[in-house]
Picture 1 (cartoon, helix red, strand yellow):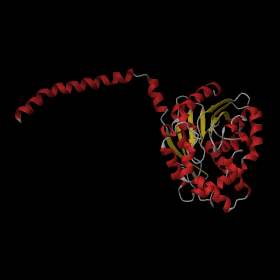
Picture 2 (picture 1 turned 135 degrees about the vertical axis):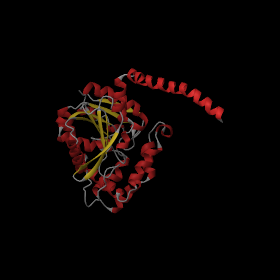
Picture 3 (picture 1 turned 120 degrees about the horizontal axis):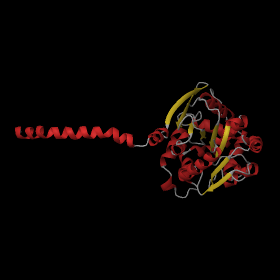
Length: 331
């Protein structure tokens, strides 16, 4: 034992010398790394925040330098800002990216229905106040599904704030809702009865949620994480949430009457628009994408061979298309 201890003591100066040498080299190695790589890495990390809007906690994700042009990401049904989890780091190297959850979705508050009006008018009002509260004065928008009627309300009310629009399976034309999926929804708009509501309740169950992430996709088994539909379903299964969703199904009927006003906004203001559309979507099929070109002939249209949540399967392509588009159109 004594001999072993003696041998260890004899070798300790050598070991300590090696450690000291390594530490001495560390600052040189750190200084050799380009400063820009350290900056980019820190700016593309997504951070998580909350802010109160009229007493309702709004959760949002943020990434990118705050002095860069802003891109506001508006999610669809039945998901949340989680749908942008992979897109945000792709944009955050050169853009300030913000993705909120609406009331009743994701990590934002879910006020009781007798304390909050669940309508598209009110969701848009909350998002409008949210943008003002966090200091956004001009921004590009990414709108998908429910994000379209919310975002287009903001654009029509504040055209001076909108620098560009990216639309992905989000409707503003009657052609986009002229398919069998909408038949029971339209019946509910005409007659808000329990009998018609009962026909829509299956849309709020796991099978339908999974269907939105698999129908029309090239290879959902390998391209779409099961976490997507399981997380969305967990939010839908919260007490009271399905009644909120039914109320918003009914409120969706207020959107088609606004289509002419949104189309007028497109014609008058000609916002730069990139259309990236999952053409196999059974909710908002490709027929809803091409009418945008009537009012925005300079819009850039890409019909993708995928489904409703196109970011899950073609997020890499959409990120590249967005970078190219925003780099050209947003200063």
